[in-house]
Image 1 (tube, rainbow, N blue to C red):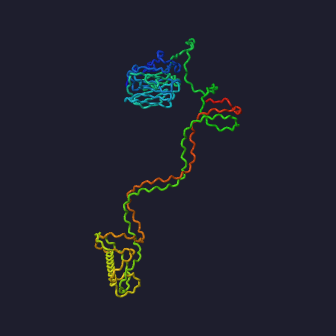
Image 2 (cartoon, helix red, strand yellow):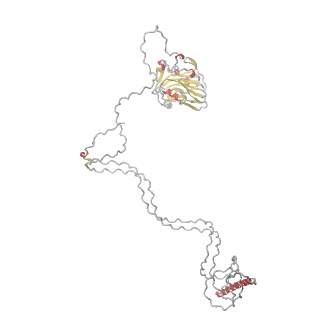
Image 3 (cartoon, helix red, strand yellow):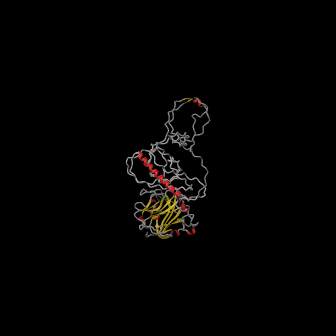
Length: 566
């Protein structure tokens, strides 16, 4: 921002600036032409000030005041006084508006918050504000005259009150302003557009100096508390007179304006009580008082029953009662559908060999053999491994039971003869000289050799099935015979149970069916009574009853009730 400032005289000094009081017509010869303005005594009663009344709305076109805009460095100087009727809301002590009544530059006083704010647009076109909230700012709002300097430079904004620095804030360099708007004094911040309103206050001086050093030269000679006669010029309208030139006394002057606000007086005595105020509204119903003493029994005539009140709203549910005693267990539900069979588990370890079974039926007596010497008892050999399963034979021809038995007998005789031959060979290999050893009874000998085959006897009754012998040498597969009759169930073997095998892998999950629900248990004990719900809404009043006046003696019937006025 750059502008050319005219040369003017301020307080006897020539400097570049603007005499804003003359521009707004706030001088003795012109103030009467301005609406909403009156002239009043200022400081010392020697200076004049101008009261801007409410909604005075003083404004001047910007193009007549600052045709080239504002300079980049300047000082705004005020001597003013806020009045008791000055509103508490913020108002602009001075501001520049564009043609749309939008603020561009200005100073805002907040009478309620006791703050001062400066605002403008910087060189980038951004709106910027700085607010001064220092404790010294409160002096401006105490109701007496004060000198205010707001110093604006390219980098800072400073505030000086009554020739004493108060605060300093950093700002950006200002941009150019438009000159198609107006400049106003006292405009309320809440104003909108042309429907403006302004605040009342007194203004004695208002200047804009195109320099930042003007505040340092000002000596505040207009303020009684800061004036020093040796450093200040004579007061206006003052004259030096001597006794000889004294003329006759002039007529009484007009009454002086209000003086400077004095210090706060002491608290006065309490005034007389004011007149009794109007009766207040009935207050809310107070809480119920304690029950009174039992009165004498009255003689009353029973009145008709009052109408039943409306049913109150249902109260809130009380908290749940204590858990009741568990009911008896219900009957078991029906079994679900069995799931599919699981995969077979791994084979368990082979259990220990069972104890020997009972001795079988003795065979037919054989021919007596030669008595041999008793040999030492041999160790019992381990059982041989089971033979491999033979191939499935072809189906045989139909044979008679006698033929089957004959073949079985021949096979048994051949097995016995082979065992005897092996036993005899072992005996022949024994030493010829007896050895002195302790005689230990040997095991039972094998049956003797079979005698000559006799005639076939009649078929005897079927014997009990014997225990299976050692597996024989696999024979050649015979032709497959017809299926035989189902045999009787064999005796249960006696053996100790082998150790439990490892668990097999889990089978697939079965699809069970939910059983039917069991019978309900017995009802639990009743829980404690819950808290009472909120009272229902009050029903309408019943019809008035009848009371015998003679029974009301001793009570204030028809007396006037006193109320306290609050």
